[in-house]
View 1 (spheres, rainbow, N blue to C red):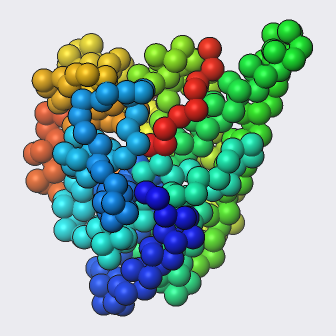
View 2 (view 1 turned 60 degrees about the vertical axis):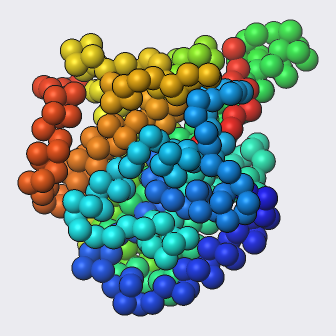
Length: 362
């Protein structure tokens, strides 16, 4: 993607405004804002449209996070993602916005401007996506629509990178590990604070525009990802994930309390991921290694939680689709129950229970 952000923004807006009102008037309009976990084709369309190439496998390095969607799927996974399964089972089209649909999610997106983090010039943030949605709907979101907000992971990764940089810089200047640790904590908290302000603004704007059915996903436990495990900072990244999720839940409670007619549900991605990891020994699921690694690809991706350094396999996305259906309160179709019969076994009886280098965006 080699276009300025303004050009990409205008391209998105222009294509969206071509969508007819009839096309937007679905039986249950579903709008999605998000990052790579929810992008079913926007990033791929933009990459190909700007003369770029989708990502090959296996990796040749550096790292185990792709800089573009995969050529095999046009997504940041080895096949369909939860949006695709969710759409198919409901019988409600959720196509990428760049192809005239209602899914605005874009791989690599963060929430918006973040303290201490350079703005990404090529990728529409969730703030940008919300503005595009409001422009496409004329500033009015139908009260019977469902709006899904699926982001935060990239903000946490940005906070981790900034914390690592602050630690290294302060240690070099002072030689005091305690001061360096305080500087790292301050940097991470400042970045996450600006992230939560972004989310508060986005959700408030959606509600003010008429949205009355919202599903907001919290962030996964990024300390469990192969990226964090290999970087040696898994514990720190898990703490940042928890800190972000606590702040997100608090702001959602505030928004929900202020609008009696609002149905605002939280999708606990953090809990889902931890449940899968806890269940893994009993079902033979590899939760430590990425299926796609530098120079190699596993033979049985359905036995892996992670497709690459941070993204789940399509098998896990099937589970996420079921969880999204459950969290929205929409009826679970019988066909999905059949599809998920084996996968549900991954969560049996689980009712309780050195600095990162500058990352490639995901």
